Amino acid sequence: MIMAIIEARDIVKRYELGGDIILALDRVSFRIDEGEMLAITGPSGSGKSTLMHIIGCLDHVDSGSYVLAGEDVSQMSQRRLAEVRNRRIGFVFQTFNLLPRLTAIENVELPLLYSGQKDARGPARAALETVGLADRMRHEPNQLSGGQRQRVAVARALVTNPAIILADEPTGNLDSKTGEEILGLFESLNRQGRTIIIVTHNLEVAAHCRRQLKLRDGRIVDGVPAGGG
Amino acid sequence: MLFWIILKVGIKSLLVNKLRSILAMLGIIIGVAAVIAMLAMGSGAQKQIMDRFTAMGTNLLTISPGQRGSHGVVSGTQQNLTLEHAQAIANEVKDVTMVAPGVQGGVQLKYLNKNTRTTVYGTAITYFTIRNMEIDRGRAFSEGEVDRTARVAVIGPTAAKNVFGENDPLNEMVKVNGINFKIIGITKAKGDGWGSPDDRIIIPYTTAMQQIFGIDYLRGIDVQADAEAALDKVQADVKALLRKLHRLQPDVEDDFEIHNMAEIRDSANQVTSTFKYLLGGIAAISLLVGGIGIMNIMLVTVTERTREIGVRKAIGATEGNILAQFLAESVIISGLGGLIGLGLGIGISKMIPKFSPMTTLVDWSSAILAITVAGSIGIFFGFYPAWRAARLDPIEALRHE
Image 1 (cartoon, rainbow over the protein chains, first blue to last red):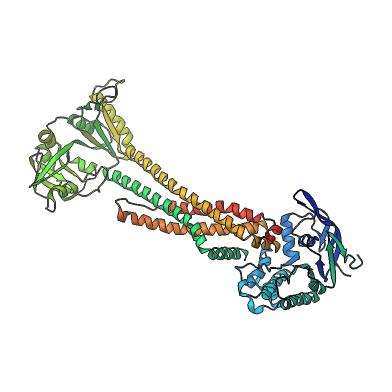
Image 2 (cartoon, rainbow over the protein chains, first blue to last red; image 1 turned 90 degrees about the horizontal axis):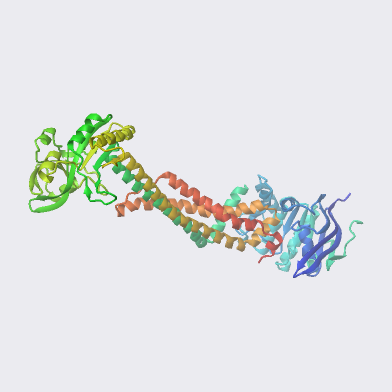
């Protein structure tokens, strides 16, 4: 029996912009199963980023329900959301977003430290070994190449053993060869059973995923049926 | 440990902007150093004054004649204190250990071709005990010398230096207003400055009254009580006795004044304390300005690191974590600044006596106070920027360029 890791029902998100109400997400429903590798695509302004923020628990929904790993997070307080982000979600950003003054391993340790875990060194080392950077642990971000930085970022996303890894244009700042390597890394993590969601407008990147959610004007135009949902 | 990471990130980000961190710290350094140096100067002055009082003796009442005149118009000093009064106080008032009559005035001292002006003090031998005057060399005059109006003098070291220069004054003859006196003793130096007894020549009161001033009344009477605790009672008794001897009616004001050294000392202590905290308070304003400097720097830092704050929030930092991170940085600035300021302040306090007649005294309570205040300033002025950082919306923060 395949478990649903994300169940979204009738998610609505509105923005006010210069007096106008913009409907960024218009009753969006979908389901993502454990172990999936999925791309969320769509042109800019399609609501892709808004959906990523909601999936990533960075933002609230205005209505509808969002259940992440069996927990309804749609009405949680900021403090609880920080905890959910820490435990359930591993973020990978386009611009890597490593903290500049910490070494690779310290960057990877940080989510564990925020969750109050005492021994962060061991899991951080294991995560860096998983992404193939065992020999770069003591380097600071500015001593690493773009591809290596993104690997550190992936290790940081992995280290808390999250329900989903949420990557926002993870290859956007990399050359195509390095980008392919990072996507290969995601594919191998997926083969190990990790649920991976990649938000991208790049169709080549999306092609690496078995399923795509295509958004346009705040609605899903393709990819809704998943697992018969 | 999260604590060490916070500390490490704090120190590292301060090191990245070294000049900026040092400038922010400078305000606190100067503030703390100023507070410590000012309080040290105040404490030093206070101690100097208190030492002077101790040197003069604190179980002491000084009686002086009242002002002559009426309705606030002063036309001179009363001539109503006499040897009989001094004798009566010594005999009749309980708890009085010693009494010293006194006459004084400015005189011309002459030795060889050297002239100087000083104060001559005519008194009894009890004076040396009451006023804690110690004889450095030679001796004090005796009761016999007082009785036979001997022309002998004990000289203070400052007066001695002024009139004798490098010569040894002991057993030399000196002319006081043209009359020859033999120097039989030199007092120990008590220190320059306010009320210094070093620029003075002390002779028997009999000689002073009859031969120098030609008067039959006293300029003052020193009364020593046997303990500071008895001073108030002795003062009241002396007052009652003098009123009786002067035959004053109950509704008539005193025609003499009694000064209680312990009271004078206490009020002087109060004045110098007030003065000290006034100085410290003025210096503390610079600490406040330093705090505003820290707040300014921290607001800039928060703006610069908005994106970093967004990342931290995305990976699960709570508002409390972010708040702690930025508070740590402002407390490091102010705490380190406080420590450097403490060193600088103590250094300045040690240097001041080398270049000026002032004495300084660093008391540790003020040092601890200054450091505590510096740390609190870090928390107080760092709080608003840190709170702004903590409250940032993670989505906005992540979009920040």
